[in-house]
Each structure stands twice: as C-alpha cells, then as structure tokens.
Length: 374
Ligand code: GMT
Image 1: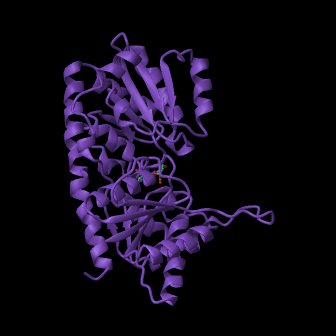
Image 2: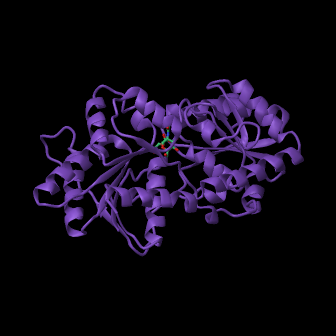
C-alpha cells in the first residue's frame, strides 16, 4: 500500500507513535510518505520505502499567523496525486483531521478517492480539542473520518463524553519495538551518573504543566531522605526553568541532573531504577511503556489511560493526581531492597512485551484494508 502519515514532528508521544508505525510498515514493504513541517525527530536515517515531504509555509506581511492548515492540505493533495496514495493516516486531530477532510474533497473533484483515518492521541481531545474555538471543526472532521482510533479505552470514553461522535472508535494501544531495548542495564551510564552506586530515579517529558514535573521533584525530595539516589530529568519545555530554580532552593542541584532533550532515550532509560510519571492527565503514557521495555518500574498517577498501562503492585504503582506522599511511599516500597526492585523490573519488562509492535501493526494494517474495501 501507499500510505500517507501526517503527524507532529516534535518531541511528543503522537509523533513518536506515528514515526515508529511508519517505519514498521515500511519494513513490511508498504511505501510510507510522511507529511509534516519538519523531519520527525525519530526519522533521521535513510530507510527503504520511507519518504518525507516537507510542508512549506508561505508567509506574507498581511498574515499575523501563516495558515499552516492550508499548506498542509495542499501538500496532502499533491502527494496523494503524485505518489498515488491509497490512504492517509493522521495522528493528532488538530488540525490534521480537518486538513485531511478538505484534501479528500479536493481530490474527489479529480476522481481520486482518498480515505483518511484519524488517530486520537490525548490532548487533542482532553485539553485543546474541547476548547470552543476548535470543537465544532474537530467534531465534524472526526465524524467524516473513514475510521477513528484512540490509543486507550479511557481516551475512547473521553471522546464520546466530550464530543458527539457518530462513528465507532477503535482502540489500538501504543506500542514499543521490543527488539530495540537491551536486556541488560547500561552500566557505563549508571556509573557515570551514579558513581557511588546511588539509585537512579528518572522522568522524561516535554515539561508542560500537564506533566506536573514539580511533583517529580517533590517525590524525589522524600525518597532521597531514605535512599541514596540521583534524579535524572530528560526533556525540555515551559516548566524546566522553574524546576531548576526549585532544585537550587532545596539545595539538591548536585543530585538532580537535567539532560535536556534527547533524540534517543533507550540508552538513558536502561540506566534507571525507577520512572516517575505524575501527570495531571495522560491518555496512554507512552513514556511509562518505554520505561517498562527497559525493565524500569513506574510510579504514576491513576489518571486517563495510565491504569491500562501500569499495573498497580506489579509493574509499579498508581496514586491520585498530586498525592506526592503516596507516590513517594510507593517508590520506597519498590526501592526498599534489591530483591523487590529486581522483581518489579522483571515484571515491567515482561509486561511491555504485550504491547510489542508485532501485536499492534496487524491491527493498523487491518484498518487500512477495511477502509480500502479489501
Ligand atoms: O502530551 C504529551 O505527552 C504529548 C502528546 C502528543 O500528542 O504528542 O502525548 C499524547 O499522546 C501520546 C501518544 O499516544 C500518549 O502516550 C500521551 O499519554 C498523550 N499525552 C497526554 O494525554 C497528556
């Protein structure tokens, strides 16, 4: 099949899922055409059957904001015609679903059919999508999609609660490529960041408010009273400055290592003992799944789709949003002795295999076949 994939190229779960899905489909022989405004960060090597089409935005003095959606739609039409796309798969509804709808209408004028699938990822529904300035268009574009998927049962329910959707929403969970994750810990990185055998606590995110990175630090401050440990923060975003300031105020700046953005997180994850994800809302929590794949248990909130990913008492623990005391208590339960930690690590790695790409890819392929009436 010739498949168009539209996503955000930035550091974020939806772009990661779209890129890894495209790469896996290409390996199976499909031709994959990524359409976005910048090279997706996980697509930085030459791969067979993978093509990247950059959306160029023409600016003009009259525009306060250049109309990205128009340029994107135009590029979708162009790629569909010249690469003979069979189907287009958009990740994150805003503004990709409405752009796909318009592209479909334009192509129909020249007799070309282009079904589109919309995959909902989270904040496109739970935060920004609900905003009255987008809601009507999102509802329309979802309903016009040939198929809608959501990355968790929780997101499916949220969508039905906040929008009038007349179509079925298929749940296809996020995935990892297990073969990319080493079976053993990265001792080189461990001794670099924790030279005295300290435990390594980790958080990876885009440091937006919804991630509650402040809670990560609060939890760590409790943990470090009892366990010799380091905190590694990976990522960057609006909250980073505040967190660094807090570290200085608390006098723990020597034990908190802020690495900034990393294009590849598998190596650093395999140096960790425990991952903390205290998000306000999380439709799935791909970061938690990636931690499990590296054999790292997760302390998370019980919001959104997290209970579908993190199994309480097995792969980690779930707590109410903001309950840092409970999260710290749970962290200490896991870290209290080597045997317990080892058991959590083993269960985490094993659990991640349920979300291997080999199990998820056929679900998407089936969806493509269905919209093409095959
Ligand atoms: O907010 C983010 O973490 C980024 C966002 C995105 O769309 O890039 O992530 C959402 O999609 C991910 C992939 O499906 C999910 O794993 C995240 O849980 C979801 N984020 C939220 O719901 C806050």
